[in-house]
Length: 308
Image 1 (cartoon, rainbow, N blue to C red):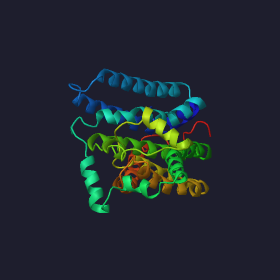
Image 2: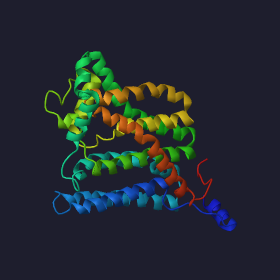
Image 3: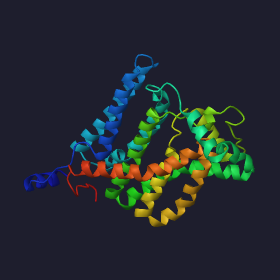
Image 4: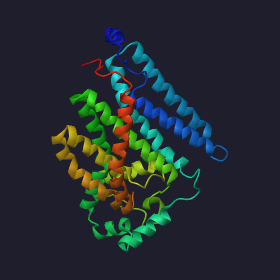
């Protein structure tokens, strides 16, 4: 790697940036959310902890970049490739904490009103009533759970198949998450499971995957992020990536993508309009992520993959 950098310097070409595109988009989200957090510091509880773990995340990102610059190695390359998928789980529930800084009420009344106008009912309530069978209930929970599995699977398989190209794929996925998180802060919608009252707010969970999702919702899920559906948007982006680069895997994932679109409504995580908004957001977010990646990548050296 050091020899390659020296050759590039002699030839006058650009050397690899200290921060990777993934680092840069993550740092941008950290800075943006920190500034946004400052707007509510006078009345939000426990803001100090939110500032502290931002500093910790930034410190880890900087440390990995520094160590990788000094001593490029495969474990660090892998860590820098996948760490955003871990910290997304820190920043998602926080959108519930940030969602009412500028707007002190949620838009669920408006969204559910749109549902009533468009469909003449509340699909999230009527769907599970129309098909109350336990086997279908479990199928919907399996589809909903598959979202987490396929994101990780596709990122790993693509990394193994084509490490260089997978950097862009993960960048698109992670950037989409950050864009959804920003929307959740400015457009707070908590979803049927938090907005409606029992029994309309809940669904039975008779079997294994239903219980897993229910347990996860009780421990991790927060009242946030319903509109647009990031579940739907991200899984379609993942399917798009598999269609472009892993066509066989695409045909495995696609039935679950369709299932997720229905499952998010069936288990009352989203309104039906959230699903349509999630679908509409996909080409927009892909275009934005591609544009940002091309701009960032233009400033780094081409062909400097240390381990190929």
